[in-house]
Image (tube, rainbow, N blue to C red; front, side):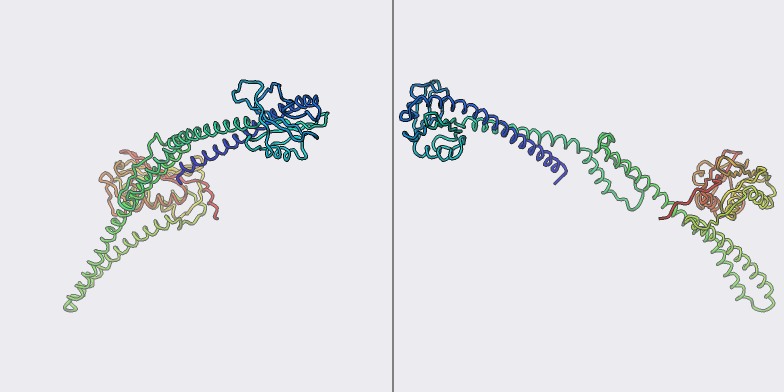
Length: 496
């Protein structure tokens, strides 16, 4: 069953049970009260007519004689006398017109008499169902003249009132349940409307193709059905939040796929050039050896072959560096390759600048380090590579005469390393992609020497491997790369 059906069944079922219990308790209480009132009334009549019967002799003490000429206060009164001489004598008072006080008397037949005697066997008060008369409440009292007076009142009025009460309760219950069902159905339908909106939105999203290509999830639960102040609205709001997260994840996945395709294309391009060179020089060397007619040309062949092998070696070294850089990035992505120890970042900066200065004598090199050493916990070799790559980037992408400043400082709980230059700056169009793999600078920072485009990507991977961050700020004449690394690395997460 649907949730609406289950809720309606539960609500109507429980309310029906409560109403039935209330009806039973009400009818039982009212019936008990009316029975007590009837017993009180019967007791009064029984004592009155017993006193009346005592004025008759046992031979005259019959029901007809005792009631003859007397006004009877209620219609339906049963009166019987059981005497040692007269035996059983009983009548009932009838008043068809309903406005006579005296009433008419009808004698009880033998069957009715036997039913009364059987009911009173061993007791003075009993309830008996008389043939042709209905249910009666009877009471037997002994008189002083030796007779027993039996007085009875009909229970039809009680039963009629209880029947009317139960009928009214039943009709009110049925009407109330119908109204309750309609109200509950409308309330539940309105209350579950946000859930239907959630289901419809989820169905539309499920029908979208999300496995390939550029995907954007624009479906959302309407704001009117996603009110977080209600339980069902909270479901819609949560689904919208989930769809926002999935949409951003799909966008990130698409971006990663594009970056991976670009990465593969760039890597293939980088490897194609040295491979083509190796193949060309290899074919040239083989052709020279095959075409040498005599020993007179052996010297030229040897010289040509030597030159080709040197070029082959150079291109092989270039490919080796590229493959090693790619392997390093892969290992850093996996959280490997770092060997931690205590590093004096000040000393590392001095050594890095000393190594960079001879490679670009046409640049002005400056260093700014504190008197006290700035130490961190990390991999000394990889941090040296960070310094070297940043200085090489500044050297490669700035013209002669540029001033490059390397500084180290302690700021709060971070060790900060900055590489600043007053070169032409970075094009804002490529600033966001600067640390991507195989990233290339534009003409404003044209490279004077070749490179793989992995230097800054390696720097970022190493810095993030040390739980740090790297940022760049650049305007023409002022470019600064800032590396921040915690002095104390965060504790490693506990393993299960």
